[in-house]
Every structure is written in structure tokens, then in C-alpha cells.
Amino acid sequence: MSLCDVMLVCKIAEKYLSSIIGLSGFVLFLALGNIMSKLKKFPSIRGNSNMDTGYRGLINQGATCYLNTVLQTFFMTPEFRDAVHEYSGPEKDKEKNLLFQLKKLFQNLEDGEYEVKTTGVTRSLGMMHRDGRVQQDVAEFFRKILNEVSKESPVSENYQSTVINSIKCLRCGTEASDNSRYLDIPLPLNTTDHSASIMYSVEKGLLDFLKTELLEGDNQSYCDKCEMKTDTETRYYFQRLPQILTLHLKRFEFDYYQMSYVKIQCPVEIPLELQFQAPTENTEWCFSATIPQLPLKMKMRSRQKLNKPKETVQEIAVAASKRQYSVRYELFAICDHSGGYSGGHYTARIKSFENDKWYTFDDSFVHEASVFDFTLLLE
Image (cartoon, rainbow, N blue to C red; front, side, top):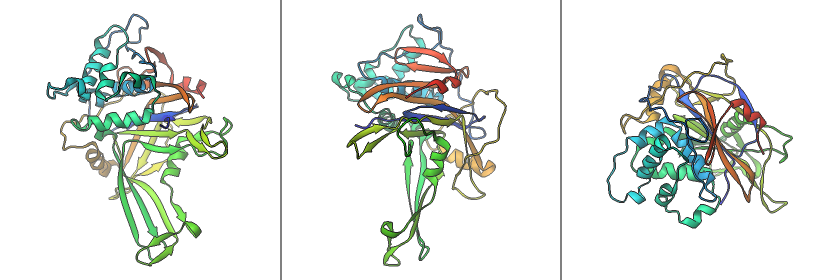
């Protein structure tokens, strides 16, 4: 098992700021603008007796903070919540049906008075009671839930991007490519110092992920046309962007001096907004690291709903891109890990689509937080 470091979740967006945080997990961004239309209005949620935030926590079964973090992120994503509410599958095997258990969980999060149990979800995922006492990887369960849900719902298409791996021979010019679908984009925190002295930039990490690399010398690649090893250029690029962009910041790596995994403790600079652009009649999306400054007022986000299974988010995005040639993402969730490789704790910081406020979800506890509180965090 490898622990996830940080996950960032974004959607298509409005403004740009940056927060300096020490993270380990994932970050989500949501796409805003022309490719989105409003979802149905969700009912307001009553506050609980412990904290009047309007949101409820999830009970930790022993070491299931990773699962609670992912579930709260999905619950606070209206595209996902809407798809779960609309699910009307077969009545049989409810105990093993993840979508049915998620629907029941979301109803309890909306209607219950106290923290909510997750035992129905863990059973539907095939987890035994003892599994709840073992720390797991938040990114692994993020993908596991999306892959399981995709069997009966198209909602996972919101998270899918198509990434092309291109390899070009510099001797004959032959280019070969292979496409892959990603639910999250892995960004290793490649720093020369594992301490907190060097800052990692998410924007630079994306540029590094997409940059062209030269394979030469001992690293040359074999070209079938030239029938020999040649200097080669290799690169990744986005052919289709997702509605919800998830970035996995990989803080853990194997240290060959210590012969064990270590956590990179450097602070992370995360923008509140990302932007991609595509040239005319070109499906290659280029990341733009510089975004014009906009007013500080944070606008409410509209939402894209999957009305028909055949009308995928990617197709909508491609069609819209031919008109506007740019997509902007807004940060709306951070799933963070504190601690080390052998153990730690996951929490989520999520911007509500209902009131535009940020909240911290820490198992049974939910409290309001400012996006600027991230500058005070973490390991």
C-alpha cells in the first residue's frame, strides 16, 4: 500500500490567487463557463447540534479517515451528488450495491441530526470489519469508487481526461502516440530537498508533466523505421479535458539511502485557478501558467449535469472549446494527509457550492474555514 500525498480538485473557474500549504493528498478543480449549465437546486441542509455549519461529519471506523475524506468530497460535488440522488437501480442485493449505499449515505448527510455511519458503504466495497482499522490510500479509494460507480452511472465521465503519450524519432520524424484515460493526474513532488526549505508549485508541476523530454545517449529509443536506436522526443498532452480536474500530488517516494519510503515535507503553492488553451482546430490543450488577475469577489459556480449517457462531458468540452478555445478551472476541494508514511490522518477542505464558503471536514467534525487558513497548514 502506498499512501497518497495530496489530491487537488478543480472545476472550470473564475479567479486566481495562491495558497502556500504543506499537503499530502489530492486537489480538485471544477470547470466553469460556457460548457456548464445549472443543476437542480439542492435543498438547504439543517445544522447539527454540535456545530451550526449545516453539514454533518462521518464516523471513523478506526482508520477510515481516508474514506470519509473521499466521501465528503463526492457529497460536496453537485455533479456526483445529483447522479447518486437520481439512481434508481434494482432493489436486489442492496447491501452489495455501492450506488444504493451512497444514496442512503447522502440522504443521511442531508437529513440526519448527528454524524453519519459509513458501514453500508464499506460493506458494499467488500471491506471486512478489520479493514476499517487499516490506513489506506485516499487516491486509490477515489479511483475505486469512481470505477465501481461507472458500472451503473456515467458520472465518472466528469473526471476523465484523455492524455496522449507521443514519441517522435528525431532521425526520420516518425511519430507514434498512445492515449490513456486518467481519473486523476499524478504530479510527483520532485525536489532536491525533502525538508520544508523548498516550495513546490502546482503550476510548475503541470508544466513538467506536459513538457517535452529528449531521450539520447543510453536512453535512446528503438525506431522500427530506422531499425536502430535514435534520439527521441517524448511528451504528454491533453486531448480532452475533464469537467472536474483532479491532481494527485505525490509526496511519498522511495529513498534508496534509507531503503524506505519517505514523505517530502516541502510546502506547496496551489493556485485558486488554472487555465488551459487550445489553438484553432487543434484538440491539444496547452496549460497556461499565467492567468490575468481578477477581482477578489468569489462568484457562485454553475454546474454541468449529465442529462444523457451519450452526451459525455468531454464531448461537451470539445464542442465548447471550438468556440472559446480556453477552459478555466476553479479550486474547490483539497484532500490532505498529515503525518508520515507509516500512518497519519486525512482531512478535506471543500468550498460549498451552496454558499461559496470553505469548510474543513475532519471525520465527525465539520467547521467553517477560510481559504487563507491553508497558509497555516500542514506537514
